[in-house]
Length: 510
Image (cartoon, rainbow, N blue to C red):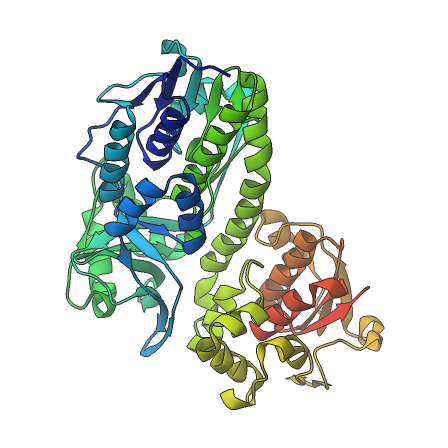
C-alpha cells in the first residue's frame, strides 16, 4: 500500500516512535507530528522500561533503542516497611526522564525525515492525510470527537494518586508505606537519573479526605501543583527522601482511569497508546503499550494492501495483548488499593505477595529467579527456617502440604477435605462478580455468618483468580476460613495465593 501523507496527533513517546517507524517504512511519504505543547516542556518525571520492552524496541529499531539506553538509569527494586527492607535484582530494569526520552525520540524522528510541528493543536477533521494516527493521550480529543465510532468506556479507580519527584537518586526503586495520623500512604519511587527520582504516592479516599486533600485538590487549578499535599508528604516520607524535598510538575491528586474502546480505528483514523487503552501504572505499562502499539501499526500498514485491512490487522494483533495486560493491571491496582491491610506481613512474604499479586508470576518462577527473597518469604509463611524451603521445582507441592491451624480448625495440608464442604458452619458461595466491585462488596455484606466460606465458580483462569481475590477480602474482613475451588491446572496459582495469605485452603475440581 502506497502512502503519500501520514499525520500523527500527539508528540508523546508513542506518537514520535510511530512517526519514525512509519517514515522509515515509507520513505517517500510526508510524515508530520502535530503536538500542541512545546518541545522543552513536559509533565511527569521518570519512565520505566522493563527488559522485555527493551527487547521489542531493539527488534523494531535498534538505533533509537541504543540511544535511549545510553541516557537511561539502571536500578534494582526493593520494598521497605518500617525498618525492614528487602531488595530484589530485576534484570535490565531501566528508567529515563520523560523529557530526556522525548528529546531522544524527537532527534530520531527528525533524523528519519519526520516533520515535527509544535504549538499546533489539530484534530482529525482538520487534516487531509492518507493515515491519521491519534496518539493524543488519555484525554484524547480524537477519541472524544469520534466517540460514536470508537465507543470508549472509562472506569475510575477507587484510590487516589499523585506524581511528584525529588532531586536525588534513590539507591533502588522502592515500594514503601507510611502511616500518619490520617491513614496510610504508599510510595512507588524509583531513580531515573543520577540526581532525580520519581515519587508516585497513593492512598485511599478516606485517608485523602481526613488529611484535607479533598479541599487542597479543589483549590488547585488545572496546570498547577498542590503544594499543600507535597509539603505534608515530604514530611511523611522524610526517611526514604533522606532529607530531600518533593518537587511537583502540575502535581495534583487523581483517580486512575482505565480506558477501553470497542473499536480502535474508523476509516483512516487509528488510536494508539493511552488514546485507545490504559493500564494501571503499578505494572509500568503506559509508555510500553504505546511504543509496542507503534511497532504493530507500522508492521500492519507495511504488509497490507489497503487501509482497512491494515488497521484491522493492527487491532487484531494488539487487542489480545492489551486485554491481557489490562486484566493484570486491574488486579494490581486493586492489590495496591488494599495494600495497607497487608503491612503486618513480614516484608519478604509481602514481596512474595506483590510478585504473585496479578497471576503474571508464579511462586515457582519467583523462587527460581530470586531465591534470596522468595525463600525467606516462604519460610515466614510456613514458620520454618529459609534453609528448609525446597528447590523451586518442589515449592508448589511443599506449600500445599503445609498444615494450617485456624481457630478450632486443624488441617494437615492446604487441600481442603471434602467433608468440610458440607460441615456445619460452612457456607458455599458461587462467585460471579469482580473482586473489588460494588457487587462484590454487597455480596460480602449480605453473607450469613460462618466459620468457613467455600467459594465456587467457573473454571477459566480469570474466574479462578477472581475467587482467590475475593477470598482475601473475606478472609481479612470476617476472620473465617476461606476455601476456593480451582481446576488442578491452576495449582501454581493456588500455591501463590496460599503462601501470600489470599486463601487458607483450596479444593481441586479436576
